Length: 310
Image (cartoon, rainbow, N blue to C red; front, top):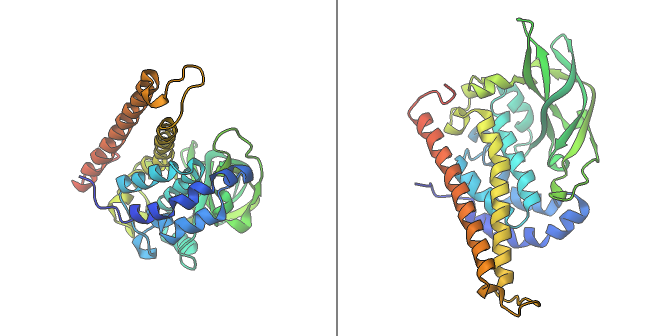
């Protein structure tokens, strides 16, 4: 059974403005500042932020309901915002010192990312020097921090997949996002040149997969007992499902009054159009049922006190 969702009604109240901004968002190739401000005004950016910094620590189903609804009004806004949200979950798995740096003075801070391990690093005392032009950092125009990926040699002579967190002052946004779809996600490159990253701002990806995270010592909510990727990937999948739902809703609205110039038949009476719409609705329902069943299965393991990564 789903929990009551404190955000849904507030979100519904701002969706008309976000939908009205969709055309301008595509023209500008950026989520409008107004959209982000509206979403922050209802606390959307706090869904996975630790309660210690004013966050909500909502469940995955609650998050998914909001992102899917948002995507029906503007897929780009939902895509970018969902990643800004899930990155807060990832930051909560880092050291307490890093979390204090990010949210101590600015509890509204968010992070974008480029997590593919393409960064170049040089080991120095106390941390690493990070360089690289990191791609596909959705929502970076609205973020104060960036999470970036790299590989790091370990004591066994192999390499660990790792993440580093950098403040906005340590990187430059390079305008590279020119696409046909999702034009407004602003998934530009972030360029970094020999920025110092102290040790406490690094994290092993495998620790995130296995739920062996330093941040769990302070953040013991159920959402932080899940592998980081289980939360991160929901950003993409849920926004995609919501975009399909929005497209179907738009088709059905148009079909109410559309008449074919070829056949003279009203679309709402066209059996082929109705069949296509019904099939699409069934596919969406199936995807959502699968997604929410996965949520329930993961949380059942967590609430039973078992190791979800085992």
